Length: 171
Image (tube, rainbow, N blue to C red; front, top):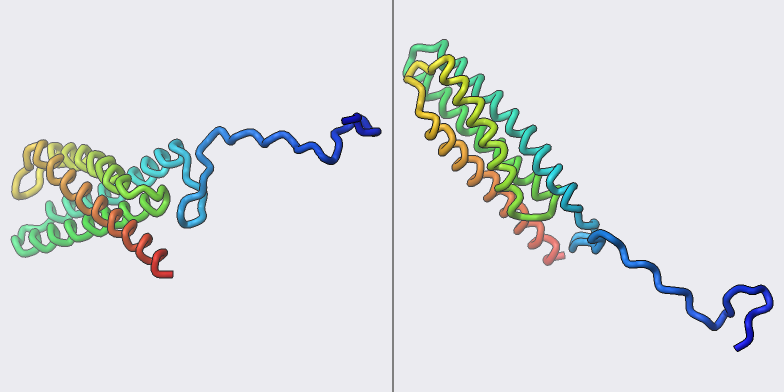
């Protein structure tokens, strides 16, 4: 085969194959590219800290309101409202993280981060200004917060993941 007159490649030769990409750029099932591990960890950290901060604000607000009241009925109402708002916030956390990352188990991981942050701050606040019915042991703050955070964030993230897969299959 003779070289082409222009010195370039002859039209019958194939171009060299393109280099393989360095990262995992295969699109996920919904057509979006899969996030990198760095983007996944940033999403878990960002949303865990943001929603954990909101849970802290709600818990400290409930603690401050309970210190200002003397009625047991008011204390029960404040405690119940605080728990319901915590359940909702942790559920939203699980959904947001799974939506961002596409990995169903990361809702629970973000729930662990947010609940540990909340437990540290609320336990410290309770030790400095005890609630009217007495401060709980530190272990109980951590155990209750971890249970709520992991269960609600994890289960809502898994449910969001399942519903998204189901809705894509039905199309």
